[in-house]
Length: 87
Image 1 (cartoon, rainbow, N blue to C red):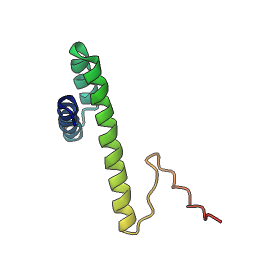
Image 2: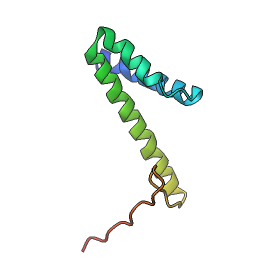
Image 3: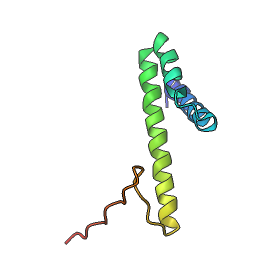
């Protein structure tokens, strides 16, 4: 990873942790806006890092649920469709 990637990944981790701890859903937008004021490229890289971290967290939770033998549901609450047999 380059210097910018490392910096924004650390910012994404910290911002997501603060968002979760505080319940303030505007944390990510506030940080993104601060970055955009001086570097639109850094803002976009930060938002990408946030999306990646959120996707990773959802995937890890899904895997953990599957390992426990649970039938996970989509975040919207609808059951996941059954896996199709490949014939």
